[in-house]
Length: 316
Image (cartoon, rainbow, N blue to C red):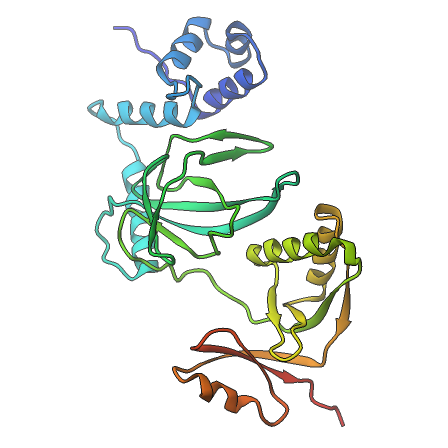
């Protein structure tokens, strides 16, 4: 009986990189130490609908075939169960196996393409299966959305995904500010992920436009950088001036550098005498205005939530 040795994930990655670089199948086979027929069979069996070789699909199908062979012991099921238990505790759900699709946005990268000011929202698939051109529920907006060109990134290269599974990272286009960090996409359930921490800003500065001819670029840059979570933007209720709140001084320098080199907009900072911010909630909008006494400045954002700032105390 002839025994065949399966390709490893590293060998499949080498095949994928070789095809991306335009190498022949024979040269790829020589580089990974297998026969050319093995490489041809591997590429033919694991093509996507677009006719491209997918190392992820190849590896998953190989693991599935391996699990079907009697006597093989694998830890894939244990890893899956451990991940499900972790996800269940994070969402406050039971520890049963979750087959429905769920994912959450953990990162937003602004200005991926400077020519189009495009943004990419990176989501972590937590359970189920993600497929392109399938409607999913955006929990915060409570509306269905579908994505025709989800992408996966490897170093400086990216490819269009047809499907993704639990544990995969998927990039979704976010040109209109559709996503915020912590947003959920599900197959229909209304869930809220509560595992992402938020930090209250400790340093505040006015941001002003240093070049009046670049107002549009500055506004676009501030909007996209704030969506990234680099800092928090506040607008004064009375004079309309914008205030940037950060955790440390370095973030001000990062914002100024990125505005100049990515958006071609110049800004300057002006100090403001604030040291603390807190969130106030009330169903009565008039009640929020009561905190506008004793030298406390309040910015109203919605009918339920206001943001209050305390000025720096004098040091005797």
